[in-house]
Image (cartoon, rainbow, N blue to C red; front, side):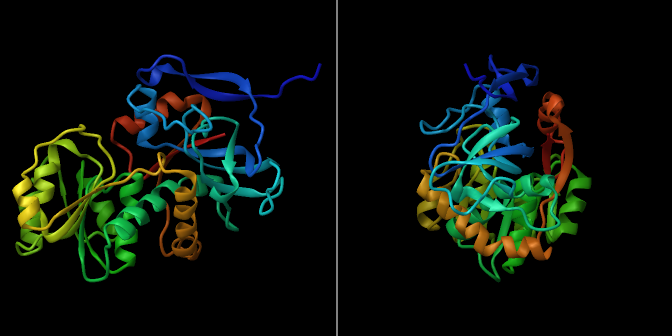
Length: 332
């Protein structure tokens, strides 16, 4: 009888804290038609990973793997029937439905991108989720354009640092909130115009001061909950609130009269639950608009730290401490 090939993967048997992350041997997946089997060399952390680990994230019904990890970089190990754009041995990066915290995972052909010459696997793994989210939220949903302004909460996060650079690239003014003075300084160095440390100053009056009372065109919010009313009050007439994360709760008070009278918009976004055709379109837009900018070095992924796979629990603790600036990446 043939021996089933195995791989080391991170498994959560009981939802809970980082201590619930364990390395186990699992069967190596087999690519279906249109899929790549990628030998993972780096996998970036995202807040959905910590939420899923804790039992607070309901997986979409069509995910290919219940394992953690949605963005990876590695080497094509095998291809499924019909794959034409990639061959074994090729370096790729991209988004996956799950399974990135493992030695191998499946990736749809249309979600894979060749790793540019000179890039490390860590740089590649730190790129797709942040820049796809920044583009889709700020530009596709928010319509951010030259001469406009945006408030970006959690500016020191992996997505926040990408949003700062995307907004600056299109010619918008950028304001941020962060957790520490050091993060504020680093966001200003990335291109933000001004910012507040949220534990020291309320962003709403500061934003009114910076915009001479007009407010901003777009608010990019990863927090939700507690900031909802102040976010809406910080928008100018016709402004758009983008809900991209819910770290501070699923509910918040809202003055509907303010929304109606000031023609405000509230839009939500998450990449993982999208159907595959929509995800493929997201990846095409990323490659067309931002991959050339990334290759040229005009924008870049900001990397906080790397951890070996065996220290995945420490990586999660570091993310949940909110001490990181930019992306945290697992190296295999």
